[in-house]
Image 1 (spheres, rainbow, N blue to C red):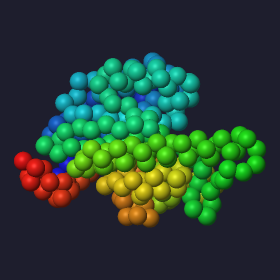
Image 2 (cartoon, rainbow, N blue to C red):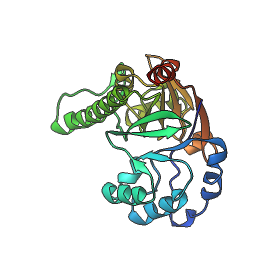
Image 3 (spheres, one colour):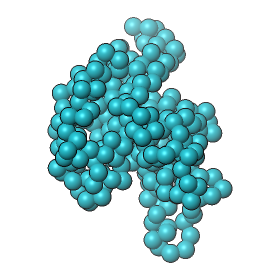
Image 4 (cartoon, rainbow, N blue to C red):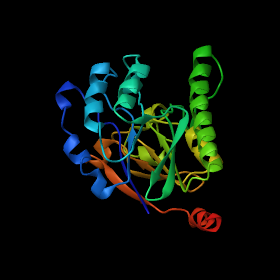
Length: 252
């Protein structure tokens, strides 16, 4: 069993220093890794990123993150990413990483994602160039997530997790105004997850949403925005694939 700690939308600013560190220092007692589901800063400034970096630096568990829309606001996502990576986090955008937890290989594929809406009420690539680009950007994020998950499958990971900021399903948006659903996520992310296969999906962004959801293909989705989970992080227990464990035993 893999213990995954996850939280998003912590929105740290200069006066937030030290607010999460005491809780994060307890992670080795209850979790094997920490996932950060974007919106780690308020406005995406390097100063705010350094606050986040000090919260996670030197933790005794691996930290894997994606950025959120707030982390892009100052238009310096590369600087924010570099600061977090210098603190030891693995920051993903259309990429994947593999961490070893208790002998199991846990693969995480990550992208910020984007909006567009959900089946029956979604934007299409039609009309003005700026509208087409909106949808194409969402599709590029989803395609990168799918390819990253497929790469993890090829590597024989025991557990595969999709980490995004925007939501792949409408279920976890329940509680948000219907009018803003298209700006909170897109079904394209869920299609990518179901096409490539994953064991679990985590996102943030929807502060007034709900925690539990599921893709059409049966992958469990959790909204870990801090206003939703109401704590420094939530722990999820993921079983290791028996077939993967058996394959390792046979190979050995």
